[in-house]
Length: 190
Image 1 (cartoon, rainbow, N blue to C red):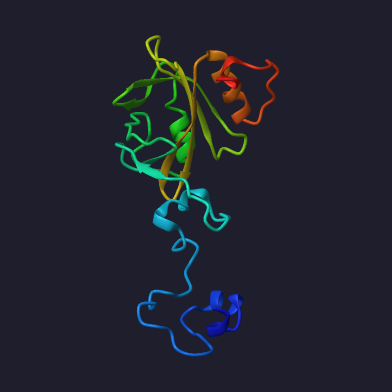
Image 2 (tube, helix red, strand yellow; image 1 turned 180 degrees about the vertical axis):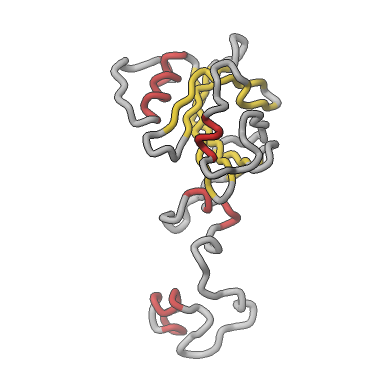
């Protein structure tokens, strides 16, 4: 790049115009791009406009859910989110939050049903936290999901599953940025 363009900065400014020589065939696709275009396979789009990923770092994988307008991260098996709004309004996360009543079915997957145990919003209103309950027959009876809204989609991100209610509660509290005073839990060591 330095030979063709003079510097990395010149290359990044306009990759279509080398200063020394011609751009080889097969490189016509190289051009300056917008931040949106720079998202690789749309995986990075939901991370926001200030995305900084080290070269070679894996981007979080997004999976289309069974609910229109919804995707999943750190959650490989497509699930259905019956409480998720199908269309976004001016306050999509606030609208979603109003639907999260304890006991309501929040997720359905081939592995079972998740019901709302508790729900909370971040102080800035940019994230929802759902403490899910999976029932007495589940090996890990609780889960934590974070929901954000980016690029016109609800992003459901698994924040883990837990053996104990106390471990789930600890992670639910900490995810909100609140202090946890309950000490260690079994899930800290599992």
